[in-house]
Image (cartoon, rainbow, N blue to C red; front, side):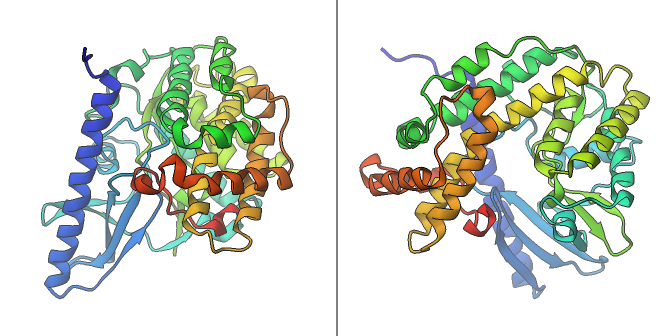
Length: 393
């Protein structure tokens, strides 16, 4: 007897179809412009997108067509149809966020290409961030905090079950955990379950973690960038900071955006304390109550980011390794990364043990040797596996 397709599966299927269609249109639009004699750089393959960079007749600077790659595992929840929708919606509001301009050409929306260098290129992955950039970052958080639910005139694409009521931070976090467990870990368990087990992650670790979440302090919701880290902050030639990559934007707990930013940006300890203090001052200015309970809840949200990384990084790292089996040092670097991720999540997941790098590398090699029997070589297109092993160091 057949059963009705779950709403989350229907939403995922519709979203994949929409992204595949927009990716096809991006390539067609780029090809049309290329056929017209306009120089194009690309496609540049990223984790989730393919990007073409070009110049337009009569327009200043360069522009980019950036559309989702089809057939890619999205390890983070999407709440809007596209980042261009979000950027265009923000352009209608008096928030002054430093986002690229969007323009429609040939039936495809282009973003202005910000000429400059990412903050990661300027500071390294975990170096001190010059205070002049922190000064520019605080109004970004302030601008986000001023976009309350209902102000952004953009259609949401996420499952209605994921749309927490304004202020219900406990439900908001619970749904993020649910996504990580069911739409990432469980969805890929047939292929990667044996690897998780070999790395010391019990099959019920995420379920037990979800049961221990407890209650967070209520905070008013606002727009979140969702992925605010050094690679998504671009410094232009005038030393101005721009925010790119809005595909993970959502409405929710402002403290979650801070937790994500801190986890990914990896400030030195003393600078992180300063950033937290400044964030609290800025968010309370525009969103009173936005920092309520941060002393207890920020560590809990940071812990979730560690748990989420176990779900995503084990899968991505293993598949990246499988794409480059000829790299003699690839498995050692992959193992080193996974050990760091597992150590960070040991307390929140209550892992009984964490393997050392030798045992983690052995687990990866055993998984690779059984990859054909798991049937994953025929379905690589379902997983985002284009990341370079150089990024694992």
